[in-house]
Length: 229
Image (cartoon, rainbow, N blue to C red; front, side, top):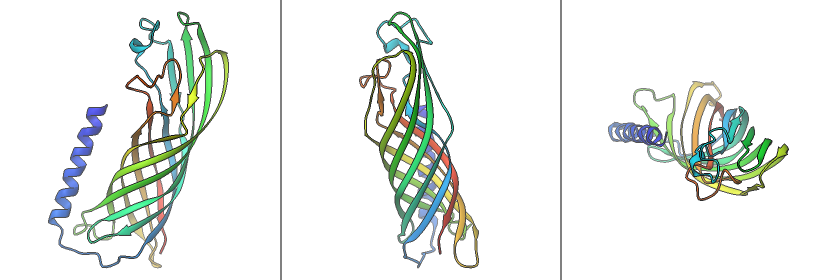
């Protein structure tokens, strides 16, 4: 999975560099752009799936497993056009629910933990405007940058469950793409976005220890975006 993400990032970067190097058009509008967005997402807490690193659970494949439901996200963004590209930031809210199932007789853990995960996110990205000569009005952008997350997790469970803790702050790398194919007469625009993220650990318990490689935070989110005049 990591190799696939790195390959996608490398390919997108090459496309962006090529687009910037071949473009001759300069956007003269340097005013701040405000937009609102809303959509669906999948992700939040990234759980460990490698039981070989868990003491006593090496031979029990289903000692611990997780399931993530689709959630919702919304946000307000502000972008600043540069000579060829843009800088974008904002504040977002993302919600999803996750179920952790424990079935580990060797460590005496058995039951189900339900988690409701709310995250307030602050992204900061540098946006490469692609195909500005070929599709000047579509405003297709490749976004690369950073996102910080404030984490609020509520829990309910049944059975014999391990103790857990939640880290209130996580952060990591984000990338995505957005476009505004619909332009209105008043100057506003309607488009879409797709973002992905991989960051630091949010949730920790016996099966998700900080010394393990896999536990972290991640998401994919997509939806519609409306840019004000």
